[in-house]
Length: 84
Image 1 (cartoon, rainbow, N blue to C red):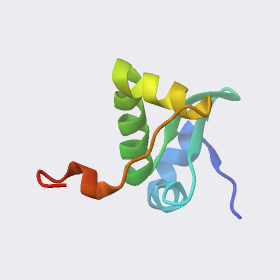
Image 2: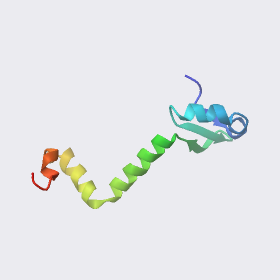
Image 3: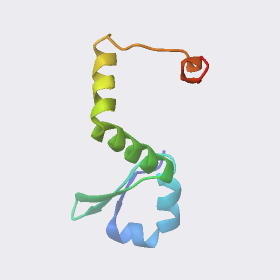
Image 4: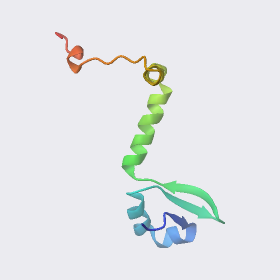
């Protein structure tokens, strides 16, 4: 597995490689040995955004808490049908 950390200078010079690496895992960009940014794939970013949206929804958050506490209820998908 290749290194997943690049300096800013390396990132500028090796952008195509950096993007390829980011398709598999987050890539850190460092300046003066401190991480200043991450490059992530589109799929990972969309998953992060979806998770943040769910966590911002009080009803969804309460459903997560119920599930973790073993108190969640699950229904078959047919329960969503108008006639079901």
